Length: 375
Image (cartoon, rainbow, N blue to C red; front, side, top):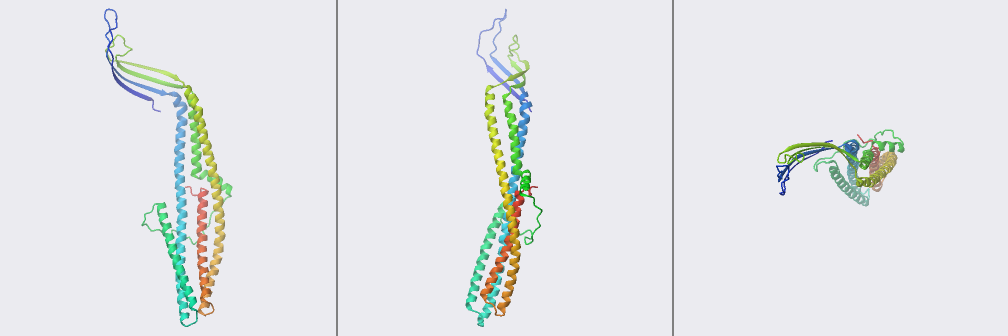
């Protein structure tokens, strides 16, 4: 919007020439030329036809960049949430493994008493020792996995290396999920909510405006100009060559370049190619979101079924372990049978944890894919 303004000043030493005859008094040449001037040009064609679409194109590009930043932040948040849930899985599995060590130790002590009174086989006691060693190894492995996941989570959320992590909610409960629409409806809503789709739409709008801006280059350019000069000598004042004189000029100019006209078509073709690329990116994004929604919904369905099955299995395994303990106490069951019951109970506990965590991860993925996490 600011007129194109140019200020200039110069000093020129001219070569000596003969005096110019002028009546009885010849005009001596001026050998020292000094110029101080200013020139202002208002490009009317650009202001009227090029500036508005160019400004809108720039604003659309800024909007697309901001939306891309929001999309990156949401992606990072979704990754952090899923990594947090994996850390919770490892933490709870560690608790289960530690509980198994305690259970195996209690059973080992019980069987050791029976071995001393020759009511149980030493082989059963050795098998329990081996089971305890395996359980202790599982605790070490799970603890290490929890530590690694915790370090990764700290990096992703920007937490300090010494900042403690804690489970922030009760993951043992089955949260009630909102009613879900069809995949097609969720996809349509996601393409309007997700910042990635909005960024591509803004970029396409910017290219449309840039195309309009570029096509204006075919038109002749109309400029309004004004000039002010304070020269010595001033060519407008012929009879007073050795004095500083002020002069000015205003006018209109029309220019047209065949080069600009011929160069416009390749520029427009390049812009059209970029637009086709963005349209393909948008279609690829749509296909990716569609796949994410379908995959997350399927995982959610499987997790619900796995949770229901794990609750039945956990109840049965807990009761079986209790019964085996009573039978072993009354010498009507072997330590091997109790070991199997302990292993089954631990497996059932881990299955219940995995089902809950898988369900939360599937819901987090579905929520992110459908754009439900957009504030």
